[in-house]
Length: 359
View 1: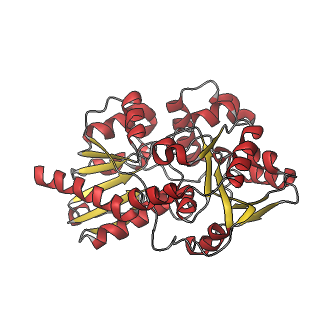
View 2: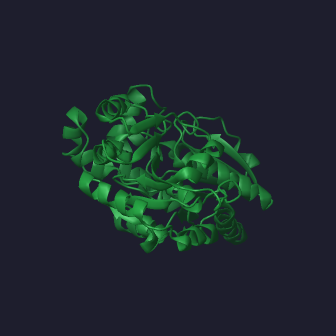
């Protein structure tokens, strides 16, 4: 079987969780004998070379619509992130004022058009201009042979927002269990806290800095700022105390030593599907602090420490509790048992077989 993974044009220039999900899923599907080509949406694609098309990021329908008309059967990994909470309540300036007037779908529509007008992305489907966000997403859902969500909670949210008639299979995200191999002989630094994420409003590093600046903890924020978030990054640097350090984006292999030393990893985001860096850190013996917004409880249950992203006091308390607590070994066991890229690829391959067998 040969499959085309088709995803956003900025997959490699603006690195995010989907960058790793796409690459690692393709790598592990290859181990199962499935040939996968990773193609950006603006590539010229010979559809006849493929048995199946696999799209990512349902909230970017303009990247998908132009390809679904090829007539090939297709599936979608929905990656249903809800930015509206941050956009409507915490985004500043004129764009924040506009977002407070609009529905979540209208906000995403405006973002897509803005990226196109500012030259930050390509608009692959002109019909998106008059169809709008909601109708474009619905057209994709209606045509898909199968949907993959990263959690049951995500699939429920999808059904809440859209008329979903296509089967939706929950395939959790994963990590590279061989790369992130914890050495229990090495001592943890009880005061070292990591936040591995792109620096942007959604990830909420600003409130994290407010919570920990001047405290007894050493916070390392690892990642580059996202496009359009240079001002946000500068504000983070401006208010950061001497105990806050910044490290540019580094390869996953180089993250291992940081996870190995840190006692706590935190993602105080306004929304998370699972937080890939939280999975990695949990496998490496870190206690996990994470937002209470999104689908994360399905992944971490009672093994994580939860915080309110809107409240620096809540963020500090969760970090402090995590730093003082012993490591929850059951968390690491749960991650290594249920959340690996090999397991995710096996679930997707099973879905492919079901589709191809029905054709």
